[in-house]
Picture 1 (cartoon, rainbow, N blue to C red):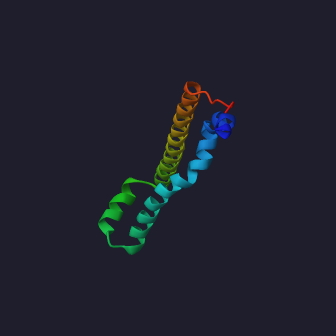
Picture 2: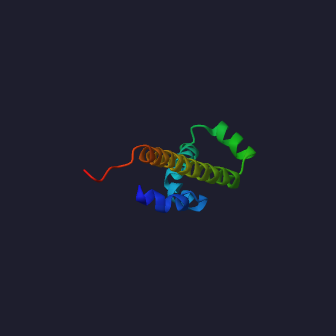
Picture 3: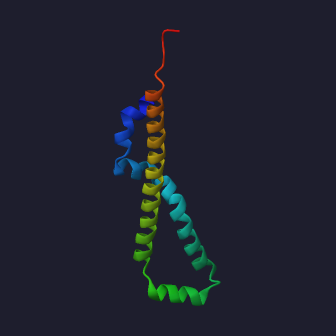
Length: 104
């Protein structure tokens, strides 16, 4: 509880959430790239590939994958922060309701 009191505002910052949540975000974004490139290499879906190549550019695809990774990273860490903050507030409320008697 002391750790959370000291670091809760620092962990709420978007930079910290992005940095710590990026591996989780990449777990969602990298499979998209793997599926895309594996389908290009296999050549099984030639018609779909020609359609996709004519309508989108690789730059837009990379921007979309980066946006997915950033969104998932921030969303994941923000959710974790809110859960920890809720638990902290519940513990503080319980502490105020039941003062600890040290005279035993």
